[in-house]
Image 1: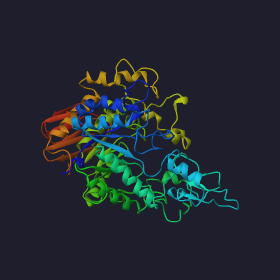
Image 2 (image 1 turned 45 degrees about the vertical axis):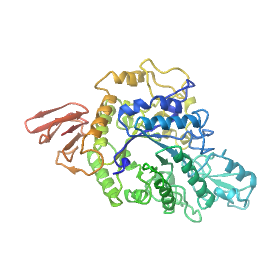
Image 3 (image 1 turned 90 degrees about the horizontal axis):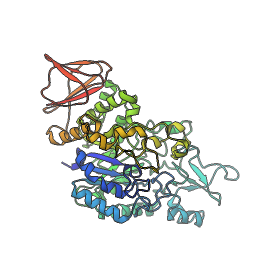
Image 4 (image 1 turned 30 degrees about the vertical axis):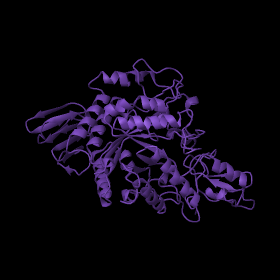
Length: 512
């Protein structure tokens, strides 16, 4: 069985994980210095967000050079040392690749703008003439995910496509040079020893023929709910098949992970067919509200559709693009209690799980960052959708972080710091460490199947071999019939009365 089928993968947002040189920005040196923490946490692999040279218009997702490291974040030597140290600790390294677009500072785009209409350099990107008598209207009605038209005009009058920020021009994946370039980029990092790639916007590289108008308002809101001309086109799967062949040509089971927003679990499963990628993020699970029936529906559908193509499902509660789930689940003590239960639910499910840095500390979203710190381009579309609040650096020390961090760490996070929680056997960090240890040790956990058990409304009960998970998603104590065995782990209070297990509100327990 492939290691990735039941792996727990920890997402490191490099700028905010650990600062290794004291300049206020997280870097590869900082990640390298905290690898032992991750190994002792109990994860199997580490996914690093982009660390390539970049003007940082979208904090690294606008790549100017795919074969180097931005000086702010370290050097290529730091990357090599990090990979080697991780392997020595039994950790695998997954890196981001951003194939839908480059930075506007990438040499290719600079050459495209300079060379003019019809040039070979310009054909690597999506340039078009505009509409209207003078070509002063965009070529179609597509909107950027970050707000406004998805087209920007250059001095010679043509327009270029950017589904995200204007500083992120979309590549033309109909051009063979684009295919060849990224095949070489993958091999470059595979030769350095990385264990796989998380593929940014894996659903976006191919656009519908002719670039047709969407024809209706609200296209941004439809992403993930409807197929639109610029996302989830069938042609992306040819790219992923070609990349799978590259991955399979290397020893050690190197993997590809799709960040793919698809309109249904069935279409998401297309990305993990046997000859395509190994995993796809399960955003349907992430978006599920705190409701037992909804969770069961998403879990069943995720397992069913993944099984159709022989792939494992994945489970994720938070990442660098969404509000932290402590806050989404209600915030404060309520959100923290639910997040503890959600961790035990997620880690008990069949397949692979992703942990976003800081969720093991129970960090909430930071909602009151001063305005001058807010630089996320997504805020152009909607100030409430800014992602800065989930990217605040981790609190390592109970003494507080040194001044000068690129985003300020709340003073009250001292009690949530790694140092403070390691001293507290009842902390969120202690819960994660215990859960990940048990998940690795228990023969029934990891990949496989589950069997639902009866229980009262608002609860979830399932068995996996000799393992049982009970979850109470209500605001009252719940009574579940049948004592499943010996308690392994609990997120909150519980007791046994005769043949009944009583669970505290918003809590989960593991039994064997």
